[in-house]
Length: 564
Figure 1 (cartoon, rainbow, N blue to C red):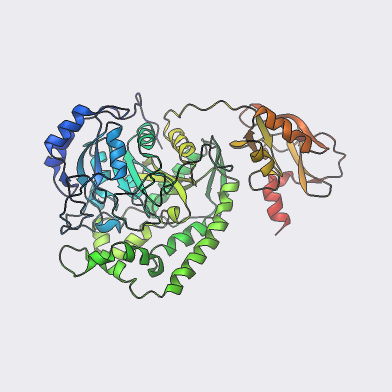
Figure 2: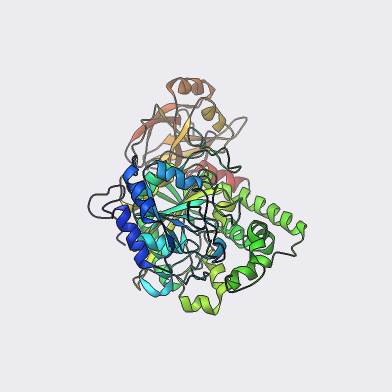
């Protein structure tokens, strides 16, 4: 599988001027575009443009307000022009970008296929017989066809990732609330995210820098913490992958296996049980959770008429008679699943999944519009339910030549490290890393989620990276009043290494932590699997009576077995 791009990578590469992009959008017509910005406004914005995105044209999904044009959400009777730009559009214009068109979509952002629109069904860029994916279908196609270098979408259940995967693009879905949704026609207000499509991670990062920021007038806006949360590594090296087989069409399965081989070159792969994620995904389109869509835009679905997509209307109005107790029961189940799923990110930086189980044809969707769409959300629906960030990236082609995409998923506020991991996936430059102050390797009670991790966080420590030791280390359980491991240098030990975390500490913080470590543990050099050596907690006085737990590969795995 060849993923690495050739040639120099710049933020947006060579692109048309804003007026040229606007003319191309007008010439393309439907079903990619619903409306275009007037020549006068485009010319004015292009002339006045300054900032990091100066003069770069972009398209806007038609559920996001763009002053002077209706926000149709693919409903033709919504004809009143927006009085002002959405907050995210204003941020982009302030950074110099120029909006040129509004794009087609699954009506009211309810669908993952790109066919639920009175303006016409969207086909994939590489095959007129296959769906483009939705609901942000037009935005993805505007980038895939080269009309604009980036476009805004939204992503509630996968609407910014599925079209990316089907059209060979990057689809960035940030942490909920990092990008204001004020001026976005809601689908599920508690889950909606503005997303964007690009052809490079460098461009995705440039858009991220422009649009992220608090909005006091958006009740769901959140500010990113000044440093990533304690469990988020600055450099992601440990990737969780499904432990078992996945529900994939044959062509997708072959491409997925190639993607797994590619992922193995980025770090260490950890097999995990993904059933909690899949179970949560199945909850999203149950009537109990569809009730939020009914509350958000159900009033626009009556009376019926040719302006409404019948499938969208059927799905949303199906929640009219849902008892309140079913809603709260679904929320309780979701909370239970989320707590289990959180465990994946204690021992891994990101989760790798395919974006979809397959790539359906337009004919298949027409024959079973609800069933085919529901299956497409198998691996995307749960990301916002679990408050995670994600990015879809190209992963080569299927045997039939259609693009294949995977997604990298991480905890909330891990957006920047995740963008860097995606850059490494594609062979692009990563963002310049801050120099660590002092690195400390830990393998036991100081690991993320373990009892003494608070000692590191309390002195200003940040998780720098997850990794493993080089071969030639044993792990033993040290006797004492509480369980703890000891890392012992032994050249005759297996070559696989032991799980460790590298923590970035201020020098004073390292000094504060050391007195809390009791013998036989002490500070000593630890050789890592990448050839580097860092200080870490090692066992210096062992007499052979300790329990050897090397075969478990790490302290967490041993605890799980011992406590089962």
